[in-house]
Amino acid sequence: MEMNYRVENRQLTISLSGELDHHAAKGLMDSIDNCMEQNLPTRTLLDLGGLTFMDSSGIAVVMRAKRRMDALAGHLVVVNIPRQASRVLETAGLDRYVDMMV
Image 1 (cartoon, rainbow, N blue to C red):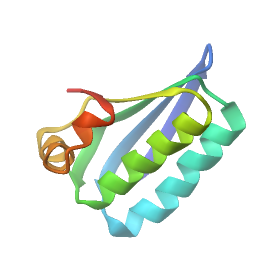
Image 2 (spheres, helix red, strand yellow; image 1 turned 90 degrees about the vertical axis):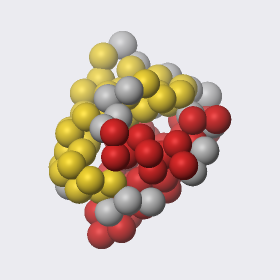
Image 3 (cartoon, rainbow, N blue to C red; image 1 turned 180 degrees about the vertical axis):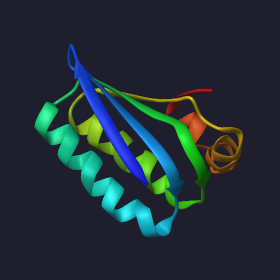
């Protein structure tokens, strides 16, 4: 699992690549938290385009990022969602709570 980010005009873009499973999720959540705390974005794009696999642990990652952005009075958008990851997120009903763009 690899995470890269960039910030421009208080918009944080976090790009993920590799496999997002329970082994990677905890460390990833901590990294995303730290990134948000350091940059205090008003909008975060969580780019899943580089994921090759995501299990239900990805649900926890997205929800934690959503809660962090809510705490910052900001907005989270999940973008470039691969088909397999989209099925996981939609099955859990996350599309009702988080803006998602394939």
